[in-house]
Length: 370
Image 1 (cartoon, one colour):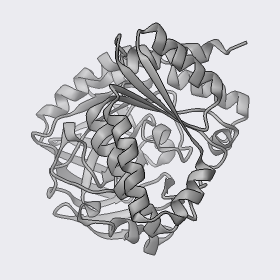
Image 2 (cartoon, rainbow, N blue to C red; image 1 turned 120 degrees about the vertical axis):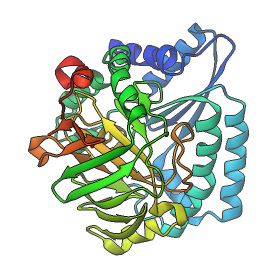
Image 3 (tube, helix red, strand yellow; image 1 turned 180 degrees about the horizontal axis):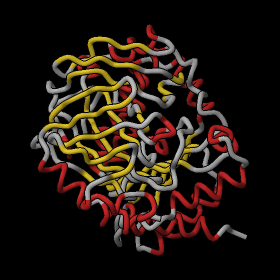
Image 4 (tube, helix red, strand yellow; image 1 turned 90 degrees about the vertical axis):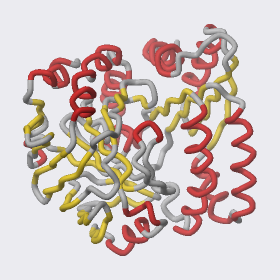
């Protein structure tokens, strides 16, 4: 018998996240998620009058493929997938798997090639050309990362992914309005004293339309306005390696010093291209059910009381002029159990130790979103 929570999740993805309309085509790209969700998505797409297409991928096979692929081969793969993506109205990306580090030993040069070909295709054609949502799905390995039993993690997962995102969407209006009026942002906390401008760059709410789980409001810093130091207090997997104790120093928008548990490796990432040393996103996380990092960015960037400050590519809807094949969401949690911290907008304290402190933003505190 099918878990009714899967039906609820699939219904939300089709009818809320991508709002599939009669006659529209949706690509369901599946990386290792169990068949029942894919089947249910196909059923829900047909119920909505849409035309579902399914693409199946597997991380262990991709590891073999990427390790030996030539640039010409990857460019052709990207062109084939681009043709398919361009024919779609909507995209649902399902992600699961037994090992989040499956691609860790793909050589860094090959990782860069994949990002510059297949990754670029997703940035240009999926993000810009479709109604899209990306989803993580529970697995025993995810439960291990979260420090939970498989059953407890599944309960946590469905709480996170089937909460009332419409209510969250309405609660975000006050933060969007305030960010759109703000010039200077200051971030303070252990190892962090950073300032930048967000003037005239739109604030965008993320409330279940593009990511599941969701729960953030993002914008971008004015490209050359970032100055100071930031220390991230959550581990961050990137290109198959988990970075920890990341500390970045900025001058006039550019990362001029970067250290981590592998300083040489992190500087290789920031040397990918010119835009990799500038920041393309600043976002505030508000999902009340996500409290601790689990080395999965779709969860970690939504953590209650967190923010992320992202080196690399800026999104088109909050564009600051920065372009890069890198987009790396590095997360800092400001709740007291992670050392605390403050966010200031134009010299007004708006969040302290992970909790909003001005009236217009109180609906975003966790007890008001559950």
